[in-house]
Image (tube, helix red, strand yellow):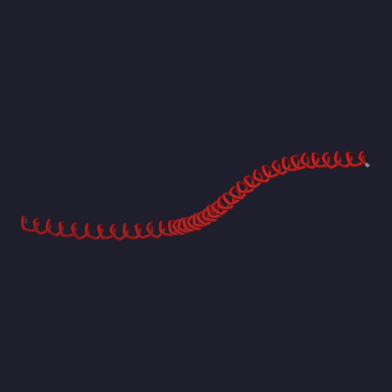
Length: 138
């Protein structure tokens, strides 16, 4: 009787282990299917987001490159303007110097004319005096 009972217990233990293995396998399969489903769902949701982010980053990179090009153009224009202003400034300095020289020459010419006028007046006065003296003698 004890032997039968022991065999019966062994049979029940085997059956319990067998049933537990089936349940565990069933749970494992269920969990695996759920994980695959969740992973596929996440992938379907995340992939477009990643693509959008990649596109946005690409757009931002293009915009940054365009800004760099514009800044380079601005720097070049600034250099051209600075160079041109430098040349204009030099030209103005030369013109100012020439104007000062011309002004000095003009003043000197006026002085020379006045001196010549004075000399001419003296000469004319002298000639007139001689002419008058001759006329008186005659």
